[in-house]
Every structure is written in C-alpha cells, then in structure tokens.
Amino acid sequence: MTPICLEVGKQKVFASALEWPGWSRAGRDEAKALAALATAAPRYAVVAHEAGVRFPARLAEEFDVVERLAGSASTDFGVPGAIAAYELEPLSTAAADRLSRLVAASWTVFDRVVAAAPAELRKGPRGGGRDRDKIAEHVAGADGMYVTKLGLRLRAPAPTDTAALTAFRKAVLEALHSAVGAHPVPERQWPPRYAARRIAWHALDHAWEIEDRTESSASP
Image (cartoon, rainbow, N blue to C red):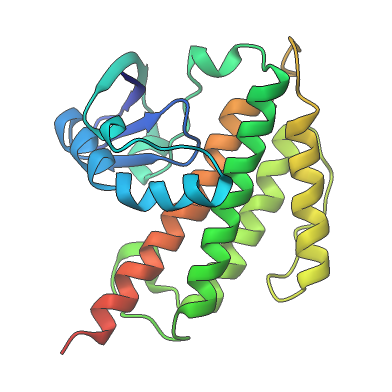
C-alpha cells in the first residue's frame, strides 16, 4: 500500500504520497485529489527513474490514507502547507539518501522541461500566466525561501547562473543528507521530510504546468 496524507481545506484537498516527495496533487474533494494523484503517477515515475529509485506501477492503485490533516488558507490557495506526523519521524542514512536523490531528480526534471519549452506559454489562470523564464525565476526564488526552513542562509540563485544554482542545490542536498537521526525541529523550521516534499512538489508542479501549457499552445 502507498501511504497517503490528505490535507483538507474548505475549498481544496491535497493528496500527498508520504514516501515519495513531490508526488502531491490537489482536487476539490478527497476523491478528486486521490484521482489526480493517481493520474500523475506516470509523470512521477520519470522522477523516480531519474533518481534511480524503483517506482512500481501498482503504487497508484493501492492508496492507503494514513493521515488527514486540517487545511488552511494556504491549502485553498494551492499550497500543501500542513506537516504530517510521518514527517516528524527520524531519518535513517538510507532514507536521507533516498530523499535527497528524489529532490535532486525533481530539480533535474524541472530543468529539462524548462530547457525544452518555448519562451512563451499558453496564457491562462494557472501560474498567473507566467511565461517560461518567469516560472524558472519563481521556482528559484521560492527555493531561496524554503531553505531557510532547513536552517540554511543561502542567496536564491538566478536560474541562468548555472554555477550558483548548482552550488545552492548541493548545499540543500547536503543538509538533507546530514539530517540523520532524531533531531528536534527548531521553531519556525520544517522537518527534513516535509521540506523535501514541499521543495520537490513546487518544482514538479511548475514543470508539469509548463508541459501542459506547452502542449496546449502547440494545439491547433
């Protein structure tokens, strides 16, 4: 069974696969969120393959809702902002390595999608109508904010500065690697599992948005 947490807001529900950071989808109710999560499985399989982690097809067929979390205005806005009890559990060395590999793969997939996309995307309400380069800037800027929740003080890199982007991501992955064992989570910081889920979700959500808006813009 694939353990799932549901974050239930007033207008939106997020379904997140707890052992697969970034595999999170939203819907107007629990059933729609779970259906969206299942639909996204082939896309997430690309991430797992990039990370070198086996992703059996049946994972999308055997969901087990193990936690229901109270949502907030963030949930309804479109952000999975609640921390699951599972994400407070200590990380083993193997789990920390797996977590960091999946986050790294999420960034790799995002970068690949950006590189293949046209500069102008189909306009629409999703993503505020940003074009490709603005989305890349947004993701890099958000990562700069997210990593403060891991206790890091890093300048958000420009997405076009390859060296700075590489160094930034390396520091984040090293922080995840070092989060082995039981550590009290400082006030206003995130536990590593949730930080990984949030970072990977944001990169993949926008990667899949770019793919969708690229395909639509190419349609007659």
